[in-house]
Image (cartoon, rainbow, N blue to C red; front, side):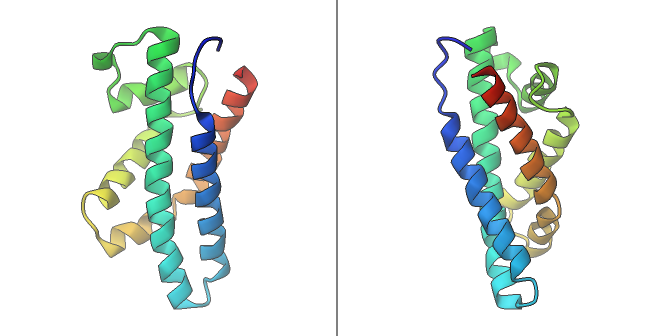
Length: 137
């Protein structure tokens, strides 16, 4: 990965922030006020962690593989991630994208709470992505 300038630490910090909010959400499950407050925090932190991940990957594919803007649709970015070993399933990232759109474009409490259920898997997939970065850095 020589000559490629990407600030992967931004993703690492976003991930840490999401994990911290999610752990607090789980710890406060018996207190509805804490649970609601940290559920909202988890949703927002999921959104910006997701945004950070795909933007870094888009930049990486441009710089490392010479991909053109028109090749880098959201689904293609996820497919490239799978093809280059940054995820084991592009379909999981497609699902994260769908859930992110459900919460980012329309505030709906039910959709937000449903998103909470995918956060543990998302955290694992971002960890996988970060481990891949660490192995090629």
